[in-house]
Image (cartoon, rainbow, N blue to C red; front, side):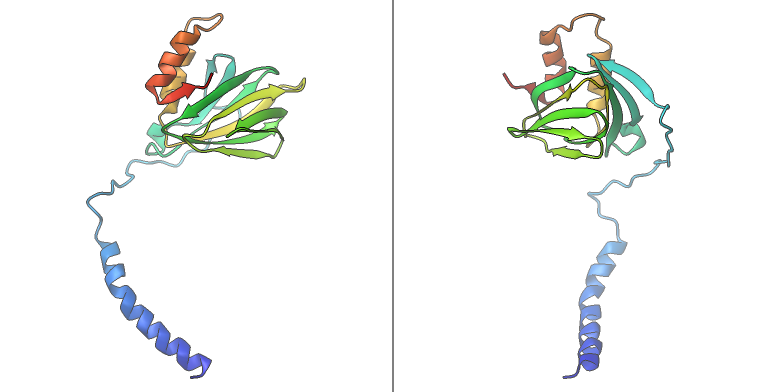
Length: 182
């Protein structure tokens, strides 16, 4: 069989095979929830809600209520020496993108220093930690999906100023499926 005839014949067979699948796509599944009421959003660099989450200065750009709880994204502007100790998320995956400075990040026991333009992925249930290294303030964009962790950050930001009560911090984080590793 020549190429043209093969394409014509297999295309017809493929089309007939796909008709039932295409029909089922037309009818919405009862298990899916449509993302209605989602609106586009443009956020400038200096816009967003700023939270001081135990020294991690976060500017929240997108939150769950704006994304159908699919994702939350914030920018961290952090001084040298500040970081988050080893911990595990049971609900969300995280992506860290360094914009400025240097972030030492540990994911699943492997530690590396990320610089501007570098990215790390920390899936849920995998231990990870990060800390700003060097003498320069660092800036990184962090995405977590699904959303929900932003509510925990608000609770942590609402704690009294001064040295954090780590027992209280661990309790709040635990309420959101996050545990610290000793």
